[in-house]
Amino acid sequence: MGMKLKIIGAYLFLFLAFASAGKSVYDVTTYGAHLNMDISLALSDAWKDAWPCKIPIKVELQGTLQAPTNPSGFKEGDGWVTFISVDGLTLAGGGTFDGQGKAVWGKHCSHNKYCGKLPINIRFDFVTNSLIQDIISLDSKQFHINVLGGENVTFSHVRVIAPENSPNTDEIHIGRSIGINIKDTTIQTGDDCISLGDGSRQISITNVRYGSGHGISNKTWPDSHDGLASNMHFEDIIMENVGNPVLIDQEYCPWNQCNAKVPSRIKISHVSFKNIRGSSASALAVNLACSSRFPCEDVKIADIDLQYNGN
Ligand SMILES: *[C@@H]1O[C@H](CO)[C@@H](O)[C@H](O)[C@H]1NC(C)=O
Ligand SMILES: *[C@@H]1O[C@H](CO)[C@@H](O)[C@H](O)[C@H]1NC(C)=O
Image 1 (cartoon, rainbow, N blue to C red):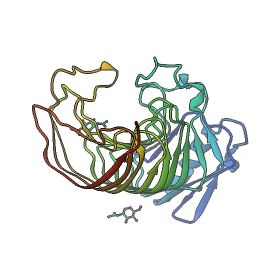
Image 2 (image 1 turned 135 degrees about the horizontal axis):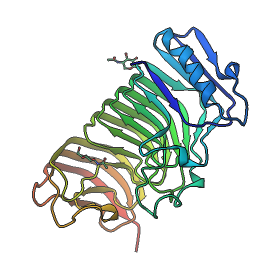
Image 3 (image 1 turned 180 degrees about the horizontal axis):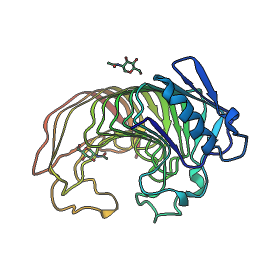
Image 4 (image 1 turned 30 degrees about the vertical axis):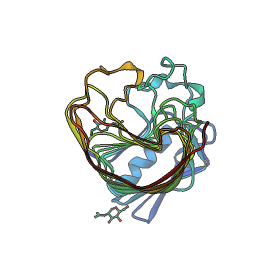
């Protein structure tokens, strides 16, 4: 199966080009794309011509690509822009993927509920040996970036911007992937900044600054299936007025979707929190609520210096 780029409606752009093997450039304007029109077709055509010219392939976005405001063309789990089975992709150019989430937040699903029908801004499905750098994901309707089945993918200077109160706009969700690096960026979003789903291995997150949102998360729900989460290390982190600076919560049960009375069956082990300084907005700065059935094992806490700055 060939490498695919799927895009459902994209408007207004300044310049978008594909270059394969560093030689040929496929500028979408030469494929009939103009300002303020749907350029999905032009994009797909450019991609079709570009990718058979051998990897690596570079997609460069300069300017802003806007998603349709109406989400009715999307199915559960869809991405607005989706890269499928691409090896050796570079996505760069300094441009913005504007998901136009403001048009739909809070309207299509009941308040605060996970809204899977809304599209994810950019999906990377089975993308390997790739570099995503200098792009902005703005106001996604749902998750900003989803990585599924990825291997050796680096995100560098990828900015994510969405208001603090936007529902479920996780920055980067990673699942069933190995060797994902996220570095050198600033994130402001309405939910988890980086969330780790099942099958995530060798994930490294460095030099990242979060403005709002839930930080780096992996949550285990009560009454969960069996599972294992281990070797998670948090080091050299500065907190500023953070609600739950250090938290293991195996009783997390959003939207009452689980049976809170049955303990989690996820075993957490080999976790460390080291050199964490700054201020806490809650009096309970370090909270370890482990499963009563499968207690946490080997949790190390060292050099925590957090000042409570509330009343
Ligand atoms: C990982 O991906 C990068 C591109 O971002 C590539 O240069 C590098 O060779 C890859 N590493 C391996 C071990 O394949
Ligand atoms: C956290 O990790 C567990 C075990 O791998 C997984 O089942 C769960 O989906 C993850 N949680 C999130 C929020 O991704």
